[in-house]
Image 1 (spheres, one colour):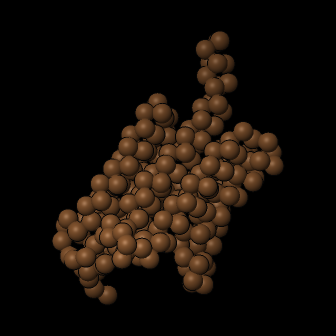
Image 2 (image 1 turned 90 degrees about the horizontal axis):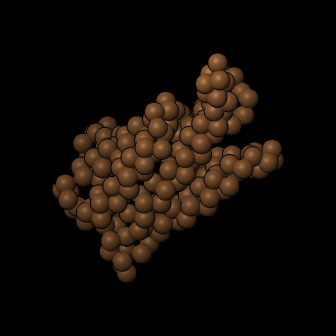
Image 3 (image 1 turned 180 degrees about the vertical axis):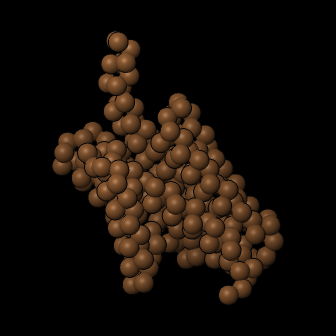
Length: 216
């Protein structure tokens, strides 16, 4: 496999070169903004800082890919997204449900298996993520957890984001810039929403312990 092969998968790019996708590159700054906001909101919390770092990794990997437009860049981009998703899938049952840490990684393995099956069957790599967000919203809604709304919003925004990703090549003739840049912006919003939810729940869980220590 030629890892340096040129990849032209987006409407905005018409030729090789570092600045072939200026709008997509600019839209990547949304990930940097999301990472900064999550880091600030984490306020020293370990899980929140890990999420911020992983969003920052997505910013770097996506930025590199849309600059170099090569096969290795595409793999780096997809890998960064996958790492964030697997971490979140593993952390979700432990933080939002009383699942033991040793068992919570089954969530990541299940997501990985479903994603692989979806890709093999032509369903793409991102439909399982949308289904996962919807599943999180339903699971929390059943237990009347107020954070169900965060995941409902995240699922709705991600569905819209997927739509813009899908029509990027379709509208090239009428809109040469394409719509992939909106995929970046909306995905940054999704990442911020789910990170905010996890940080909020972790802070709520640790608050009683902090209060107890303060009273001793």
